[in-house]
Image (cartoon, rainbow, N blue to C red):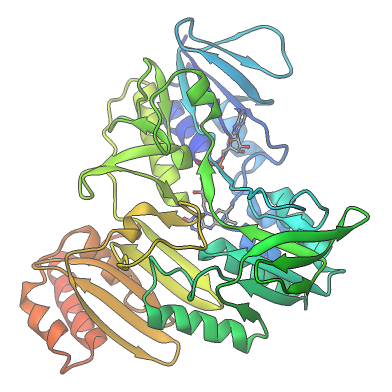
Length: 444
Ligand SMILES: Cc1cc2nc3c(=O)[nH]c(=O)nc-3n(C[C@H](O)[C@H](O)[C@H](O)COP(=O)(O)OP(=O)(O)OC[C@H]3O[C@@H](n4cnc5c(N)ncnc54)[C@H](O)[C@@H]3O)c2cc1C
């Protein structure tokens, strides 16, 4: 009987276990994870933070789902892997654990800047369910908070704090929000909404020191010498794949664990999937990182099939996220990157992010905007390469499908670029014709 060991009980690890069980009804599946809360929805944490969903709604699996998969589950931490002997070591048991096939699905962790005062009580991040609980607990008492960072997570924390009536100071190192993914008008739309909700935006402002008294946060001193009094400081400057185990085991790593199309690492019988994996993308022509839930699930599933002997190549889809930025529903799909300097608010990648989004496409922009509804489409020679939709989401799924399937849009290219008719109307008409001819694809 084959023994499968999965390190990490996030969506990639669970998807792998499900795939293994589909192929191998007999094999022994051992899941090892160091989080006491086990498997829960990380994207859901934002909605838990604002009180829109209760904690129990974060858990996609019930006890019978685990029973059905016949998993053995250890709450433990893997400390070492010996690829030559096919064994690993865990914290709570002295004896080595044997594996036939091993999956590393260890995810990514928030970057922790080395600012003076970073260890004070009241400094928070949003990685895990305990983090979300802490933010909620502290927000009940805090009058003011400083939020630092860019991208989605920083705004999720801002929204959570606003719901608790905390005065939020949002510090941006640069001169606009999420500059490598959003264009200037999109950034300004988000910033206007934040200001309207009472957030104080501080541009070109950095933390010099977090101030405290009796071990608790009392304020932030900025590099230009100002002091912002506050009781909480939230840091969301980016995440890094957890590579310690892979490095110790001598696996090939770059920004993540490098895997081939079968999710196999450089060591025999060791696979990697999810936030920790860096996977070759034929469209981008290089191996990229994604920090996206559906991508982690698909990668975990592919790894599981291959671990169980059912050879399956990973087909990297177009990265998609439907999220909320300052209350505006926003879809980001494909290549939408903006030329210019690096995003100063972020260290590498963030949650709910794909490196592909930052690729600057060889495309012309077709766009329109009205109030909070904005549409930006990256128009290539024959295909659409990417899109950002803010507000009205009617075209979200159609655009995803047109981009993902590389549908030939030559027929509407002139109309998209001329600007005589609204871009949304041109796309909507094309979509209704295309979906009549091809059938409406199932949701991904
Ligand atoms: C606040 C937030 C908002 C997000 N928003 C979105 C969104 O809008 N859209 C989207 O698509 N994605 C979003 N994401 C990202 C998405 O949740 C992740 O891409 C996905 O959860 C990654 O799954 P994973 O299984 O690879 O890793 P994880 O879910 O991180 O699981 C890895 C697990 O491995 C454990 N582990 C690590 N090392 C060890 C060890 N040595 N021994 C034992 N266990 C170990 C970790 O503790 C963790 O439990 C968000 C994430 C967060 C936190």
